[in-house]
Image (cartoon, rainbow, N blue to C red; front, side, top):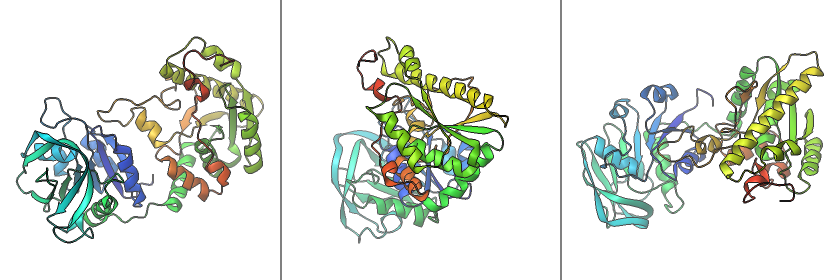
Length: 418
């Protein structure tokens, strides 16, 4: 993303809601990014965030080995919001006390406001009651020096806190989920009232910086794009074509793992709606041979990713042989932000969810340099970008289909009959 854009940085302590939280910030027209909880202060400063959010997590902050926040975070001079476990980490780090409780809160609760400024502006008057979503088994017994309680529930005397001087806040509930009806407004209050963000991050503002980034990454040489016909690779191709023009060649690979009549449908759609240089490769035999006898889905993903790269490197050689122009040096992929996060590239203490075929299947000595223009976007943002680029709805809203295809939907070895 463009360096001038405001950024709210989320430090991931292992919450199942971390990606959702990032999306909620972006829905408020402010860019958000995710780093693991133990990211270095240098990494954080490099991003120049307007504010920090410490995510929830499954641990107890007082347990030995639990994820901790660096005390240096609180000397950066930027606003901080801790959510659930993130709030408890702040309390623990700043000298307060957190302990376990027999009255766990998992589900809806009624929050009573004790203050209506800052985070709770426009939520209601003092003593207003509002529904929130709780998911914790610990409680805050004592606040650190400088903090005050600004809301409570029947089971949590301290359900929200604030240090107004240092602009540090904490919420024991999850504002990012739909079960907290006023959650979006609470997050907006933090983003705008506390952090002072401008809210200029929108679809129109994305395109020029993204095009400029692709041009910078591929200043010379030719480019091939792994084009599957899905929204991710199609938008990536359209954006790259805007950046480099005829230097781009798109390659559609039939890996033998597609839906019925998929190849014919995709080729017809791409040739009808997009003015791209498109090559078709039937590599079904190659993929089926590589997958012979493999049952583990994770191994299948990595094998498929590896074979895709081999096909693209072969096609790059074929293109080079047919042209006296500069050689193919780059490969464009439709990798999205969740692909990167779920493959562990930015994960906190959460386990790797799955290896993405674009991320985990890349060989370390790959000959082509990879360009991932959508690497910082979520799926809904890619669709909006596709609309802005003029792609038809039929392509933007097409039913998603996994890159590894039917291989990961087949239990056991993959054979042509299966």
